[in-house]
Image (tube, rainbow, N blue to C red; front, side, top):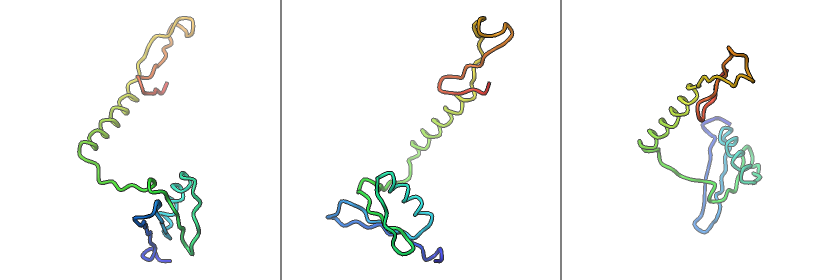
Length: 114
């Protein structure tokens, strides 16, 4: 089947408590198989595609993130990167290391490469 002929169809009626999803797209089939497995659902094979019956809660529609959400996400990522970069060198107790040895202690929430 040509790529232009592959499709994914998502339907729900007002009186139903589940989404019916049909796809013969290889890319979306893989993603939907993962979702179905997480919900404990076994998809049916229909011709060259799969059909899934998913609970209403399995599908969400969301808009693009706001500028505030993007900024907060970037700050969170930068904070994690900075924590990984800040390893603090400390003297270890004399009993555990030779006098000229140092140990590297990761920054809070970070890790170090000793």
